[in-house]
Image 1: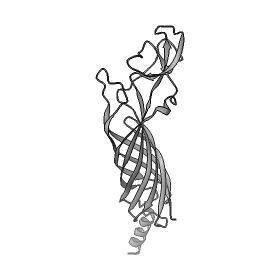
Image 2: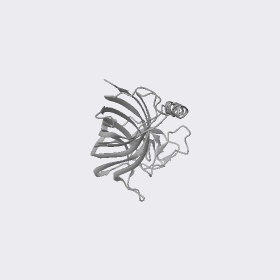
Image 3: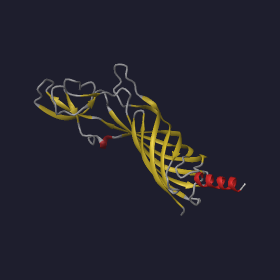
Image 4: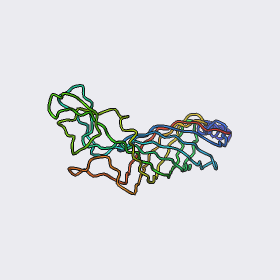
Length: 243
């Protein structure tokens, strides 16, 4: 009996989370994410409502590409910058987020994994920035001069496009599109410290707008969307606080 109890205690010492467990009141976390048509950043403030439920308030910023985007280059100039033929706007989505994180499986070892399911909703603000290109004049090789113009698919083609202009060109002409956002996923937290956050999150998001958001010129079978459904993978870091 003594041997059995001793073995049980030894096994328990090897398996239980051997730090004093405390109830946290808040947390901060942030990180990077990739999805099927781009990448983004996240930042969250969490309020611990119970030991198993965290209320989340956050902000996500995600770039959104069109599936038909293909990078092209001017074949006559080696120092030209690549551009996306047919792309009229660069879309960035801003998501103020309200949501929650709910415990499924707690961590029982220092090296264990805590599993949560997460959700988020909020407004989706699509910022469509017009694309500017460097255009060769006249429309023949070699160009006499190169000017910067807003891309117009009815005027500009592979004969006169020299390359991509600065991304910041056109920032003052951004057009906002207002819609809604939803997210659902699973969060796997594996930090070795009880108050640390190191997590991998996988899930899906949807951004919905009342109208089509123009990213590409609609030609040759290319169409734009008003609903953006994506799977994502995020890496997050942060810290929990007792105050």
